Length: 187
Figure 1 (cartoon, helix red, strand yellow):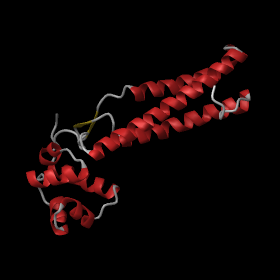
Figure 2: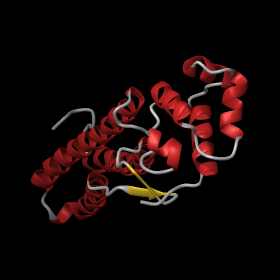
Figure 3: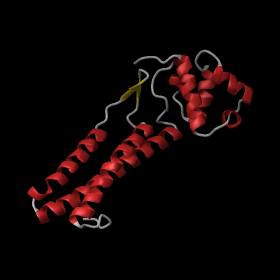
Figure 4: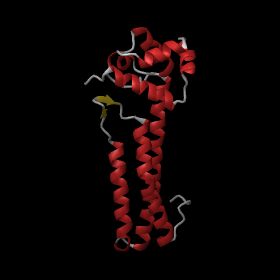
């Protein structure tokens, strides 16, 4: 496993805190440090000290090894925040699977009713959807900046939802417009 430079580690922490909409004062309150100390930690050269890594890990769920040495996962899955992100990832994955299953039921109904030959375009689009779903289901660990990230990276699943949604909506539209089925009715 590669090691990230300390500047990258600190930038990642600073960006994450910004995404969480936390000010330096809020970070200071959560860690028990002074605001100036927090500013110094995030802008100084070198990795987090053992003490600061422990405080940031406890307060925000970061992996101490990542903060101290640039190794390992960014978030500790044992932390409340890490677990929350894992649950967020799983919820999005389950939603994709549920939608794909619902669409598949509708496509099966249409194929049984109209015959396979007349539904080739619909079956082709369903294959595209399932190729995507299969890819998402079996995602290997990702390496971002040389560091292995857990496959439960919520940003990855947010991107997956963004890619899946137009395909899903297109299938819903085709089923409604061309085959006269109401997508709101579960089959």
